[in-house]
Length: 405
Image 1: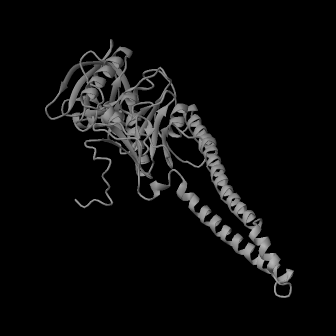
Image 2: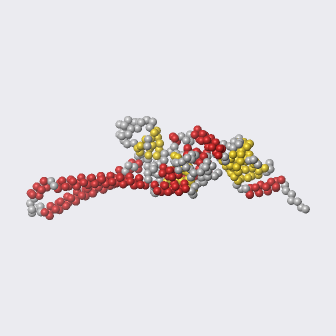
Image 3: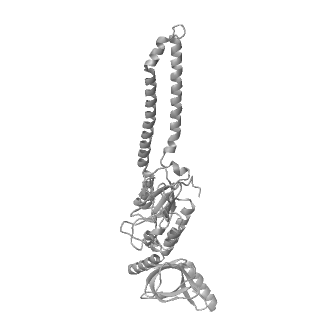
C-alpha cells in the first residue's frame, strides 16, 4: 500500500490554501484577551468565547476608531492567514468595532471626550450655512426614506438648486471609510453645502457616524456639513462635529433652503410692484405738467392774437402735435432709464460689484447701525460668507474715498 507522505511545509501550505480559499473574508465576534499594542504600531490580541479562541492582528497603518482593551466585546472583519513558522492561523483584521451595547456607549463617551478636548466641537470653528446655495451634495444610502425625503424637500422648496447624490454606505464595517470618501468626493464636485445622514436605527446601526474616521472627515472639510443622522432623539459624534445638526433628513433639506421658491417669487412680486408704482408716479407727474401747460391762460391769449392767415388752425395743430410728441419722447426716454436702473435697485445688486452685506446677531446692518469693537459679525458676499470679529472701529466721519492721510 503506497502512502502519500507530506512534508510539514507542503501540509501547511495545503492547509493555508484551503483556509484562504474557503474563508476569503470573515466577520467574527468575541472577547479580547492578551491585548498588546507593539511599539512597531502593530496590534496583537486573542479573540475568544466560551468554546474557543483565535489569534488576531491589526497591522500598523490600519485605522481603528476605538480604544481596544482586554475584556471588550468586539466584531472584527478580516481574512484568515496561516503563519507557517509557528504552525498556527490567525485573523488578519481590516477593522474592529464594539459588539456589546455597553462597550459601544463606553467607546462613544471616550471618543467624545477626546474630540472635545481637541476642539472638534468648538462653536468658533463652525462654518455658516450659505443662504443661497447653488449646488447641494447629499451623502447617504441611495435607497430608503432618507434620500427620498431630502431630494423631494429640496426640489419642492427650490427647484433651481442642483442636487448631487453620492451613494454611500451608512452601516457596517466599511461605512465609516466610505462616508469620509463621499465627503471628499462631494467637496471636489464643487458643492456649496453637504448633507451627511441616514434614517434611524439602533446604536449599532448608526455606529459609523460615531467613528474618528467620520469625525476627521467632517472636521477637515472645506465646505459646511449638515448632519442628519437618524431621528431627533439619535445623537452621534458626527452631530457634534458638523457645522449644523438637523433633527431629521427632511429638516436638513429645509435648513439648506431657508427661502422657499414661493418666498422668492413673493419677494420679486413685491419688488416689481414697488418699481411699477414708482414708474407710474413719474408718468403721472409728467402728465400733470402737460395738462397744466395746455390749460394756462397765456396759451389762450396767444391764440387770440394770432392772425388767421399766418397761424391757421392747421398750423397750430402741427405745432401742438410736435410739442406733444417731443414731450412723450422725453418721457419714454426717462421710462427707459428707470427700467434699466431697476436691476441696480435690487437689494443684492451691490454684491455683484464686490460689496458685502454685514450681519450681526442674525440682523443685516444698515448705514445707521454702528459697529463696536469685539462685535461678532458675518460678511455676505455674492459667492461666499465669512465670520469675523471687529478689532477696531474707525470714526464714522472717516471717508476712505477722500482720505489723504
